[in-house]
Picture 1 (cartoon, protein in one colour):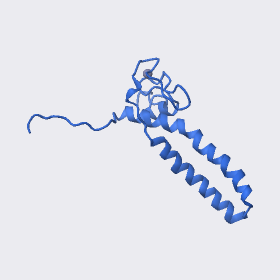
Picture 2 (cartoon, rainbow, N blue to C red):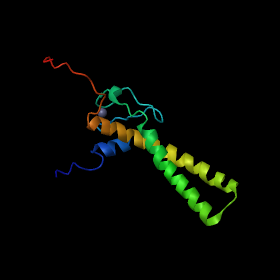
Picture 3 (cartoon, rainbow, N blue to C red):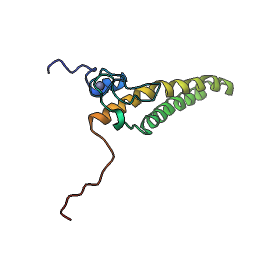
Amino acid sequence: MTGQSSSNNLPIGRGLRGRCPRCGEGRLFQGFLSLRSACEHCRLDYGFADAGDGPAVFVILIGGCIVVFAALITEIMYQPPYWVHAALWLPLILIVTLAPLRLIKGLLIALQYHHKAAEGRLEYRGDE
Ligand SMILES: [Zn+2]
């Protein structure tokens, strides 16, 4: 170990902080979820970055599990009126979906860069 393995230098740390996956300095996002065209520090072109539906899928599955589990436990234990469910779970849905969305998108893009993940391409090998 050289002491360079803090979470800021790992792709996971860079992605979660919304920083450039190569240098860790430049910002990745321009708005809430829209990407910049390139890193302002090392000029890495962000054209490769395509998280697709990945962040939304993770948010839906994890957030949905949290909210449904909490609603079921509350209903089983207290049987509150329906307006209580609406008052509790609608704000919680917003919190568990919007808060982690940017973190997960940054993380997936950093991992995509780290693992050089891209669409498959056909190569001509010349022997057929
Ligand atoms: Zn950079």
